[in-house]
Length: 448
Ligand SMILES: O=C(O)CCC(=O)C(=O)O
Ligand SMILES: [Fe+2]
Image (cartoon, rainbow, N blue to C red; front, top):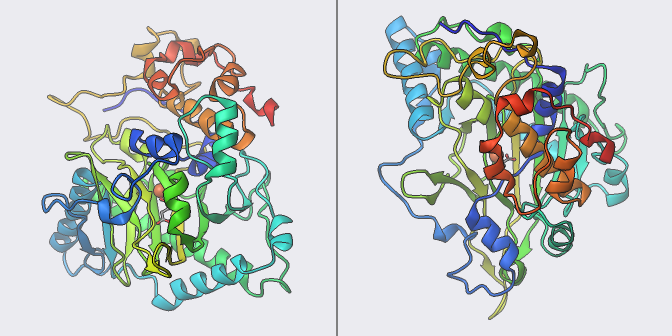
């Protein structure tokens, strides 16, 4: 069993809140983003038709009523094992018969659409303005995926080809530090109550799916309950406006660049338009995650992957524009798309250490305990968690896009980390030891 204990620090909870806003990139997306305007239609990696299908890599469809209303322990265990198999092999599952009524989802989509149709001045009053809060409205063009570390290049890309979407971020409403940015009731009737109810509904489903995962991993069904009950989640309403294909071709515009999610699980509700794609890690090709009416797409995030010693997979995914509707000989237009993502996180103070049953003879802990890494220096124990190294770097990347500063500049404001300008921040992640990380203090916020 794991003898060490790592506490998630307050710093880490900052990352938890910030994290879902981060979009990492693959080299494919970077090529699209940076090399700009020379795409032939075939060469544009962000069109849905480029996704190849691989019969061996299928997102499984799980009838979750067989867990929720199981008539026997055998049935419950079987379903739990299917779920774990889905996360182990693909990282994504479709959850069918999940227990959230259609009307509840419809109402959330309706109120989300009404919100995005409000005049820009009203939405701008609710602007997202602090990564630690990660709440509020993000207008089109505020976010841009890139691996570039050059501040001028980032600014140019953002001006020329932002990720083409707008979003509204909502956190737990009773947080004592951070407040949600609610529109006035007269501007958006029933919006607030609908989203508060939806938040709670999604939280309850997260608890149930985590119970299934616990059982599927051979743990006590309630293993995660007291580690995920404080609702450090993020409800993200997404609106992808229609876009002309000429724009897509011009600047390699993506609806959302390739990334993995951060937390435990993401519950993704999508409309019927399509465009979500999942990377098949074996073939390195993207495959469409077609909308299946009535289902929720559920994927495992980075944190759950690490928690489980990489038993459960956090799979890269992206949103591309679906095939366009022709509006002239040379021009097409892709339909608008709406989705709702509920990013689930563990409690701010939860212990995140290698799950029992995820290591043992023949399967070492991939992420060594702090004691081992620090050579038994107890003064440093319990301060930071190894994977925070990655989160710091990823957070710096995120901040660099928000602040229009280079990643190196942001990192250089984090004491003890002085990357050179040529350093690839993603590779850099891998080469930072916990020892270097242990003394870090985060002063990057002073850049805000
Ligand atoms: O809109 C979608 O379908 C996916 C969005 C997504 O992956 C995210 O926000 O992390
Ligand atoms: Fe995602």
